[in-house]
View 1 (cartoon, rainbow, N blue to C red):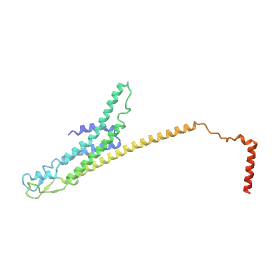
View 2 (view 1 turned 120 degrees about the vertical axis):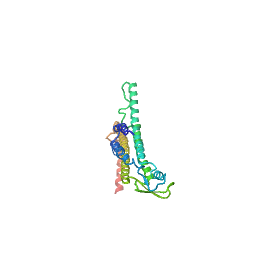
View 3 (view 1 turned 30 degrees about the vertical axis):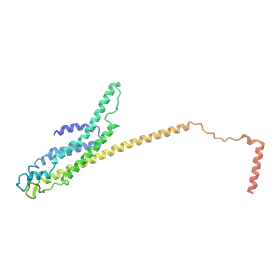
View 4 (view 1 turned 135 degrees about the vertical axis):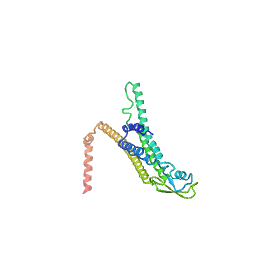
Length: 270
């Protein structure tokens, strides 16, 4: 398979990725694809030829090999790398769709643009990018579980027992270079776990940034509403500082009533 073509195709994703996305892409192509192409394929290239069982029964070795290795590590990792890089192509396709849509809109409306920046993660592109991260983390997790489930862990035993037909009895089967294969298996598992962690960090970063932006807009709207309310209250007519005195209090009957109430109050206090 031509991994160089896939790398050149996915390198355009860096323009639309965050720092976590760039680290993820570097991890995939440097620590996974490069190790897979250069070293891992050579280590597992002789797994069938050098698989030996202590019997001469025809077909016993093939049956035992198929039982111990239901699917080759190399083919499983190749499928994993293909599937885990496919969601990134969704982001590239969405950006290309936006660019074509903006181009048609610009031609129809005399130079005005529909998008200020088609590659900016807003609206539908933000959801596409977030779904691609979920798919990538889910695919890596699923393949790690498949590898663990098929081989009962990530270990590579030096000796395996087999008692399937047409083997005459329980035979011992030996794997070539089990320690080296175990090291490469653990390396691929650790790099997959790191890629899952980077996807989770990028998801949290995107969601946190989006939440902060929404809350900032909400607070700004509340402040604007409060300022408008203050402006409306300030425009109302101010109340008088002086207390209006009833002019009838200056009349003689009113004054006599006030003096009479004052004398009654003084007598009650005595």
